[in-house]
Amino acid sequence: MWVEDWAPRAACRADNPDTLFVRGAEQNKAKQVCQTCPVRTECLAEALDNQIEWGVWGGMTERERRALLRRRPTASWRAVLETAREGASSEPVVAV
Image (cartoon, rainbow, N blue to C red; front, top):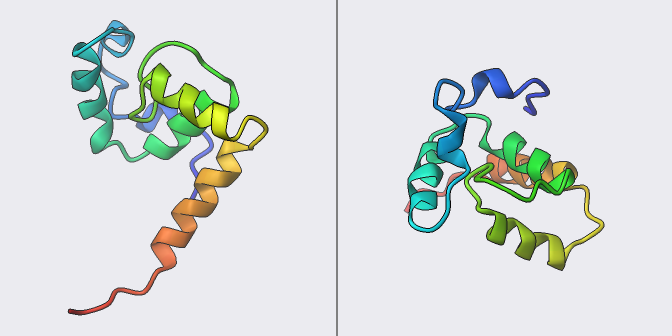
């Protein structure tokens, strides 16, 4: 299910925003906050669809997001990510 008003649910909502707008190795720390975020996908879609150039959004750095945007410059990232999420959640679990 897609969350329209995702920001109040973000794992970083109580953090200092400056911790998400860092460079180098500090970006890895910022990305760790995103790992367990319940609205990571919505955050990433927001950054991609609005071509936000700075900071860590949805667990991706600006460099990582630019690479995606180069591959699919006209994509609706919300649609892409929402479809991917639905596909992943509907896959049957196979016992091994």
